[in-house]
Image (cartoon, rainbow, N blue to C red; front, side, top):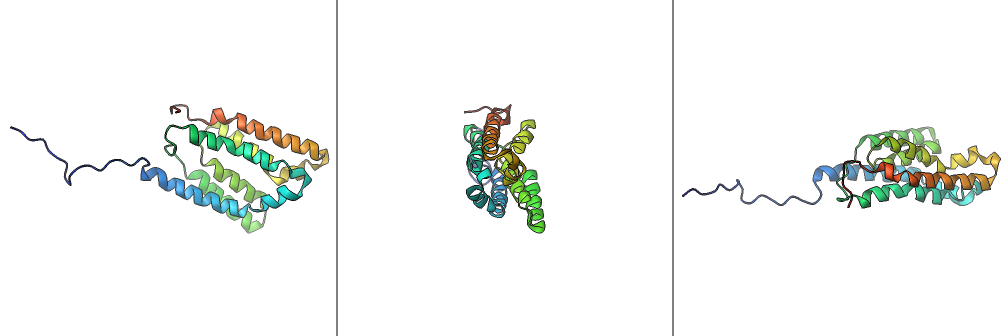
Length: 176
């Protein structure tokens, strides 16, 4: 009678729900995003004190929603690959913004870092361009048109970025 062979070391361990190869880039990306957010902390003051930037928090929330949608509607929440390239670019842009003391580069680094949490698609670049809707420089650039026009345009760009969320989904991955 023949006996079956057991693997060396006893039973094989159960695979974890989140592989360590998926966690490490996620932690690095979160750390870089927190650093970029710290450097962009001037956003709150601009949003509170400028009449051209009153609807920036709403535009920012609309712009952020596709990240939440892509992450929560995916079957396994952390299985989406997180590439380190957007985070490296965000870190370099943030360093440049601090070095030359240019707040718009620091806001751009926050936007690029947040882009790293969704899979790259051609629509991602258009979605990243919509980040200008919540940046204070846009209010300054279009201030000649008046606060009402600028704030309405910000909300429209925020809603447009939210409308792009179906194009940000991975095409080959099943949802729910």
